[in-house]
Length: 146
Image 1 (tube, rainbow, N blue to C red):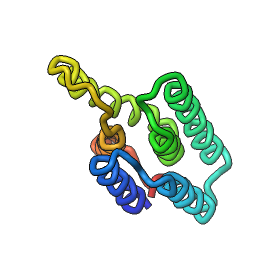
Image 2 (image 1 turned 90 degrees about the vertical axis):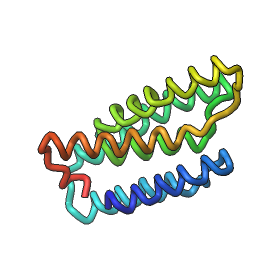
Image 3 (image 1 turned 180 degrees about the vertical axis):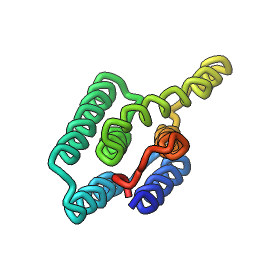
């Protein structure tokens, strides 16, 4: 399941870099894959509810930022919600890492006065991969993600 979600995130990254747009179907498919995996494995309701809560909180935060400014798109909000749901509480860390990774890029753009809209999904995907790597290196079982 991780591989499928990762392929979808990499596809979203590719389209975001090329066109600055992400197909809206990617996020619901990621959430659907994760939900199907939870349902088929007989996962407890706490895992499902905590994933939904994390996804909803992250979506709400990003939606408010997108609503108040013009730098974020709807697909960014949906991808963040999908990451939150698929990684559960670790989704917060993945998003924070992704946002931290944007800082050097945005600082460079400010310094060179080349301000423009930039793709956020590549940074979020990188945060997702880093969290998976950290969980694996720490020896934590990520079988609940599979």
